[in-house]
Image (cartoon, rainbow, N blue to C red; front, top):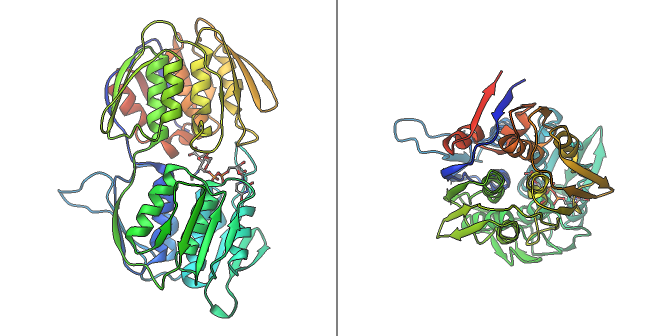
Length: 425
Ligand code: EPZ
């Protein structure tokens, strides 16, 4: 089990390049199942979840090429979906990565059948997929749940039919799964109460480049007109807004001065607003964001909600910021039922946090003290890294495989910004 050792008390300074977005790369890789041609991707982040998705798609028959040779450029990946010979996502792969459920829509749309293990719950919640299933049934799929697998079929080997689907709850991968399924359905599909996340828009851009007819991505109503087939395309994965937000919070917490490169400010409005409210000075360029933090750090209240409101994936990071800010703050987590796993770990570092249901009251303290803590889920791990950067003395973070799922070479990037951080076996 690998760990991270962090010596706190250093202000982050310098430049850092933001990687491609994990939550755009994962659905876009699944889009390769929709076509017999080749999908060329660039700016794909080097993450454990991307490796898992490559293995999952390869075992279905997708031919995956990572360009080798001397001109290899970071993050290029080609996926060729001509010889798909297995329409199944097995439990042992799905259990490690819930996003595996994103093969369901493409498989049933192109091949009329799919068997996908029910993704188990995870640390942050039960994570049901009822909206995915309801939408596919509305499009004519016959779905049965047997032995922990979702078995989906279109009768008589036919095609899915376009349908009007109203989501009971905003679901990011639910929207993505059904948008992909609808690209090859007969007729028109309208997704209402759809997720508006930028990663949904990036997937739509890739599907449109492959020949799909989609309008309204980024709004809560997406209309897809089915086509006979999709062709190959090239697509550059959008920057990771959560990695961007994580580094900005780390810079604010350590009272540093950093510049993010290859990022986008237009999809970070609520995060930049909250950081400004906390006292940071922010300057944005075409694909850069600079943050300087001097003077007092002020507590900020926040309430998570679907995009464009404050993202749940940034809740844990801002909680750490609030533990060392002046004043008290209320944090309300409305998306997942158990996304406060980082609280008991932050308390070990001296944080003053009380929880009442889905609300946390964070009282700022002058400092945190280094200790040994345990990562429980991806974004909780990030909040512990930020806490380690500001705590007095050494912090050891255990189970950092959670971190490697969603952050590319985080200790290398933080060391580049001056942090005293090293990975230990
Ligand atoms: C996506 O998960 C992201 N993952 C999550 O990021 C992110 O936290 C989440 O969206 C919310 O923004 C990927 O994109 C791969 P949801 P997803 O379906 O799609 C309930 C990270 O850290 N729900 O939008 O699984 C669900 O329980 C990860 O990178 C149903 O009830 O989330 C939750 O309460 C963590 N039925 C709410 O909706 C369903 O069929 C939002 O879930 C689907 C969801």
